[in-house]
Length: 408
Ligand code: JD8
Image (cartoon, rainbow, N blue to C red; front, top):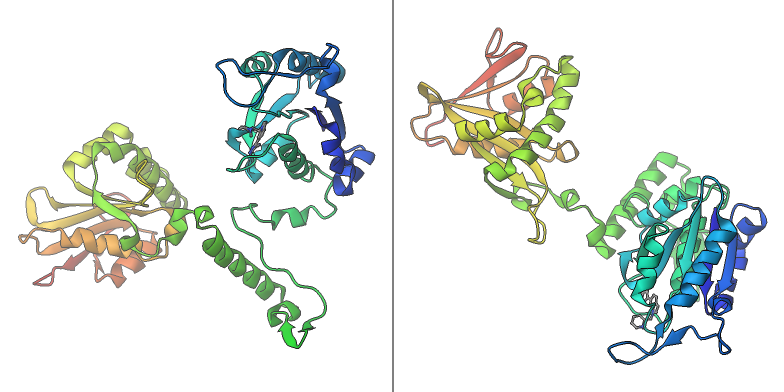
């Protein structure tokens, strides 16, 4: 990877000569050049800043030196396959720098960094650059620095260490914080028992056990616990769902149709795989048919609550209706729970919800599933249904019924 950095304080980037990044440069894994912006200001005082139009405190970086510096960087580094760099400009108003963005940048052939100072860089420089190369304005975090250099140090280190060969044991990269959305587990080394000035501190015994599976499980549990405690924002909301009470459950509207189509396709993939046939209505329906279903059935949707901005993620649904022409039978269908949330009792709770919605005239509950869907059949039996012999209402299916207990 080629990296160019432009700054009025080139010595600020000296730490990139050290440690892993320094070795990566010596090993030819990283070709990094630092340029002094003042070399591109050709007046006697090598001026790179001026007063802000519209008034206000501080100074603004002039456009001309930047245009010259970027032209020099492109001219010096352009090559087939990488005619221009991806320009990264640190700024407090930029997109948050994350491990995911670090991976994206690590896939680039050539990065250039523009380190601003003062109150910032004349806005026309961003337009100028964007006409010539990809430009990303990145923020290191929600606090204010005096310039972009510190951010470039952090970003170059976070990106360069992802390059093949820079970090000795690449496997260790996978277990780190922010890889996979979890914080890292606690680490220990000798002595196993530390006499800390009279306080005995021991290493968790599991780590001395040699049982790699148990060590792995303990470490994962530590990562989940720490993430929930220190960075609940990183815990996918769905991960905290333990039951229907953690979800927003309501009758569906046409606005839910698209999400329902996606969820039913995801959930019936499993049915398709075990039944060996993809010709199952939930997999073949289109949006209009889902919308039509909303008219013919009462459909409930369960969404993960989010902070009010947008509807939360649709994670489960069920529908129910009195059988057309046979009002004493309550049909329940399309009982579905997102694959990552199955096994938490959501299906059983939604089935009970649908049954409870049956009007007084209903005496029998009916449900249908794939003949080979042993898991579903077992679950419905556990909810009191009995399997009807023979072929079900649809090819390759079975019907199950349950008598409604009075007062049910
Ligand atoms: C680049 C000039 C200073 C910023 C007036 C203070 C990143 N997370 C971050 N916080 N601050 C920066 C950052 C600050 C910079 C420059 C990045 C260039 N300044 C300015 C606006 C308010 N002074 C950053 N990444």
